[in-house]
Image (cartoon, rainbow, N blue to C red; front, side, top):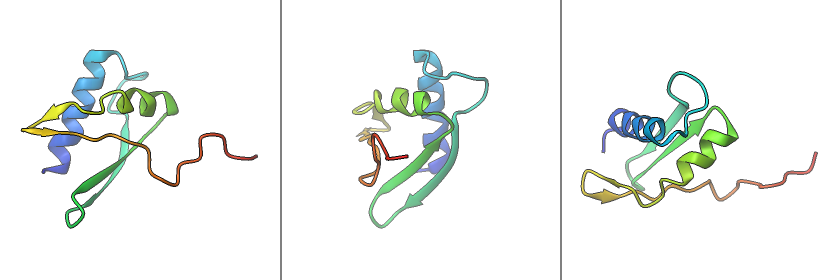
Length: 79
């Protein structure tokens, strides 16, 4: 799976769904692990991250995408 084409697909899908808060692609970073078959995307805001998570299960090039937060994500971290 091509990292750049997936990034563009997610951006365009979020844009159509109204999940992009500011102009430009909300994905500000990415990391691909071909061996384990996953790509991590980092979003610029929590709201855009939450919008992307709503795309869980969307079909891309004959694959249903699993979109999740990383296991170490803390919903309410202590300040």
